[in-house]
Length: 100
Image 1 (cartoon, helix red, strand yellow):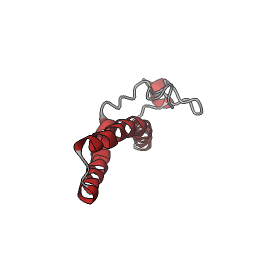
Image 2 (cartoon, rainbow, N blue to C red; image 1 turned 90 degrees about the vertical axis):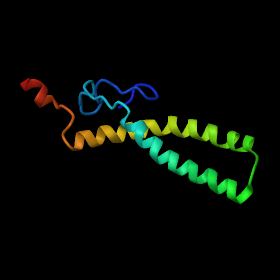
Image 3 (cartoon, rainbow, N blue to C red; image 1 turned 30 degrees about the horizontal axis):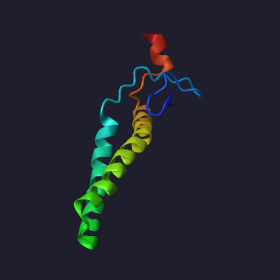
Image 4 (cartoon, helix red, strand yellow; image 1 turned 90 degrees about the horizontal axis):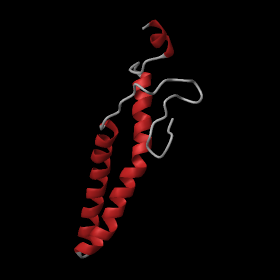
């Protein structure tokens, strides 16, 4: 489904489904911001209440966690969005491509 880390392939290697018309936009990123942000803010508050570390500790903890979590969550969320589009018939199929 993917060519590189985040680039979507033109076609599925197994079934030949065409992904060229698939435009996810910011759909996957929005869900990641919501879910990851909720989790990380909760964790940052818990660490602050429990331990009360200085601000540089928060920067060292949460900056790489946010960046890494965002990058490594994009691929599964993109795949999930494509799967949901396929399930609900929002991806053009070969039959539809032949008709038009």
